[in-house]
Image (cartoon, rainbow, N blue to C red):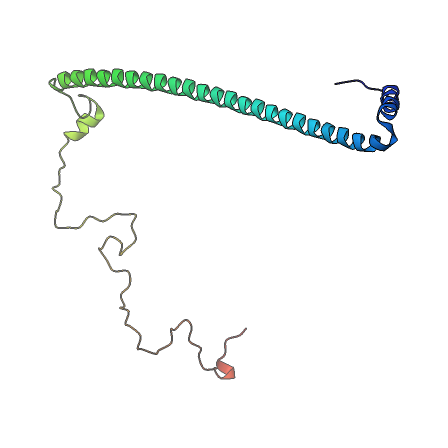
Length: 184
C-alpha cells in the first residue's frame, strides 16, 4: 500500500507535536488510531466478501462443468442405446428370416437313424433267434444281489429291539470268568 519508513514517521510526529502541542497530542493519537483500526476492519470485510464471491463463482463454474459432462454422458448413453436397439432389430429380422428358412426346410423329408449300409443299420435289422422271456426279470450282472430286487441280501429278518434294551454294539457285558476271557 503506502511505503512509510521510520524517517517519515519521525517527521510526522515532530510536526504533530509542534502543531497540536503536548496536551492534545495523546488525544489526537487515540483518535487517529481509532480511525486507522476502523479503516482496516472495513478493508478486511471488503476483502473477505470479494473472496467469498470468487469462491462462489468458482463453485458455480465447477457445477456447470459437471452438469455439462453429465449431459454429454447422457447423450452418449442414448446413442449407444439406440445402436443396441438397431442391432437387436437386425438380429430379430435375421432370426425371423432364418425361421422362415427352417419352415421351408421342414417340408423336406428328414432322414433319421444310421446311414444305409452302415454296420449300425445292419444291426437294426438283425432278428434274434430266441424270443425274450418277458416274465423273467432282467438282472444286471454288475449289481450285487438285492439291489435289483431279484434276491434278498440276507436270509434273516431284523426284529425291533424291546423298549429300554441297550443297543448290542454299545451294551457292556458282564465280565467273563478268567479262563473264558480272550487273550489281549
